[in-house]
Amino acid sequence: MSHAVAQADIPLLSVPSGRLLAAIFDLSPDAIALNRVGDGIFVAVNAGFTLLTGLAPGEAQGRSLAEIGILADRAELRPLVARLQREGALRNLELRLRHRSGAIRTGLLSANVVQLGREALVLSVYRDVTERARAQAEKALLEGQLRQAQKLDALGRLAGGIAHDFNNLVTVIQAAVLDARREPLASPRLRETLSDVEVACGRAAALTRQLTAFGRAPAAGSGAVDPAALIAGLRRHLERVVPAPAALCLEVGGGLPAVAGDPVQIEQVVLNLVQNARDALRGAGRVTLQVAAARAAELPAQARASGQPFVRFTVADDGAGMPPEVQARLFEPFFTTKEPGKGTGLGLATVHGIVQRHRGFISVRSEPGRGSTFDVFLPAFRAALRPIPAGEESPARLTPPPEQGVEP
Figure 1 (cartoon, rainbow, N blue to C red):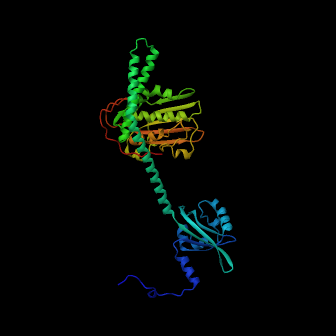
Figure 2 (figure 1 turned 120 degrees about the vertical axis):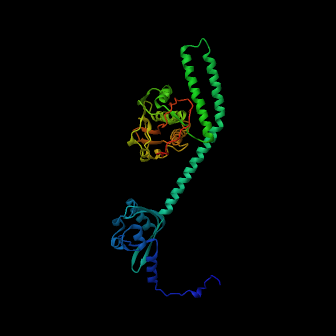
């Protein structure tokens, strides 16, 4: 037997047009309303309107759109009315409405001026697309995360590709420094300078190892790093990063616990943040680097619940500060507010990645004209191992602490 149904088999009902329109009005899942053209008073609303706004028909009828206050942005009412008067119709205009509960719904508004009897009315149909808009926003977020992951992957491949050649250059510099230090006529000042170059070459070689690892599969090291020793080893380099007329202030607390992680990567976090703070200064100014044991009140709820101690690295400046729209994109790879040729947009993205791999978190406080403060929280080392000074390899593996989120 065929599944097709002949038209003759369907009983046809003779329904007066008025009753048919009323049935459509009541049964439509979309919100439908009729308003007087002159004063905007609601004449009738359907069940879909009640579901969308939370207002019963009696609460809307006899009142205007402005009076019932369902527009999420009241400033949109005047241009909306003006456009309807000018064009006589609206089609799929995106609009946000406020439910009685306070929830915001997103929808598409279509409206026409119609003549019913002797009265001109505005017939409005509002289709709720909140869930569709939310799905589109989530899709856009996932696509953005995918693009960011692809950028990081490309950066990792590039880093791994140049690491070998960079290491060869460092080796040549180290050999030249060694020969120069053997020169018996070298002055004490020259020997001191060569010593600084040698230390910098050691750090460059360590960074090369990190670049190679980053090109393969980024992973944090697994040792115990003494924060005070790390900052002490970086002092002279930091002083060069923040030259006069800017001032560098170092505040390192006593009795700090060792930090779990890789010393070279933690150095990179500190250096990148200090350099970023220096770039934010208007010539003269102050950059403050503070290292202290984190207080429980400073930690997110998940970190407090774990009972894991953290060490806080704070880098603050009294420079230009940042508006919210810049703060929202700070850690995106290749995003920079600097002039072309003066910034790659990789410094803070690198900081973010290292902090994540160390199961820490980072927060930013900034206002235009009032400077910026970056707080990095890294978990303390749990095992009773000797802290590893900066530049020394980790002697043992570490069971990582519980996963912590990264705050933007």
